[in-house]
View: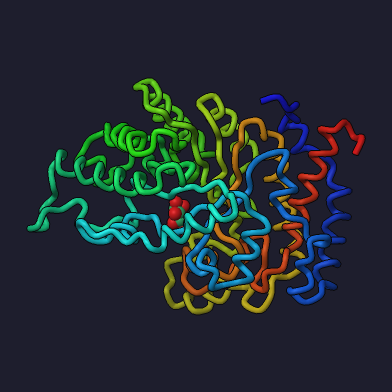
Length: 401
Ligand code: GLA
């Protein structure tokens, strides 16, 4: 907490002339870039983890093809750029504990080994969530809902088994994911319905028992939203008041080119910093039109509209590359201005090729939400993020660098 902060308001109003030149240069450089194997030389493409080493950890969510090394170029990208990793799916309940008493640790073991071999900060994701959890967890043999004691026992077994297996190896756990509604009230999940409001406290209690030294987080989306922000503050303050060691709050950060406003994100970072670490945990920027903005009631127009909703199947135009680069620069200016409070920024994926946004909210689209393209090349957004970090370093060094 010793570094001087740049107020967010100053950063957000910074003139953009220098950045515009930078973006044009980056677009030009990308257009002239040699083939992927050459472009990856250390000199031309700095490692994000070095670029941000004065500020916060930087990482990505990995899928099995990356951490088993099957996809060599993407494994190399992750190795070069990240010093923290999160598993995209392999530690979710349905994967790691698919049947009663049946655990499949092989993929999670490979994920943890990948991080250990590279001395990365390893995040476990996620212990208690309403999604990607099998129905049997909440049911008895006859398919009827189980009672509170049974569900608590199952939750305890799961957390002790999973977090216990990786004790001292996984550095921090998303203990509870997405427990809140947008209005800040608790989501009506089976966890809440069957156990009651103290299911969150129990989850943190069991996680702390399983690995007393692990950092423990609450993680959610849309935490910029003022009502949801207030709900998260209430929730975490209440857990901490009960003596539960909640280390911090993860803001998922599935953002778009236009939403949310930077000011809302800043207000949430500042509110959460009062309670502990703040983490940007699932950063990506959706660039495709959202269906609700386009779909009317006339179903006969749907085929035509589908094409409109998937406008960049061949390429991502330069004008869009620049919009994305500017948006990423704005986000990183904001994160860098709050670097005393932010411990980590994690992208949800490595390259555009395997991003979940190719399949959500519509399956089979071609999206461009990350810093690396489908050929593993850095996009203009990559260079704008690098420049944001370098500019931050220069400012903090008093302009002497
Ligand atoms: C949420 C979850 C992640 C992932 C993303 C979308 O944010 O926390 O695990 O499922 O949705 O892929």
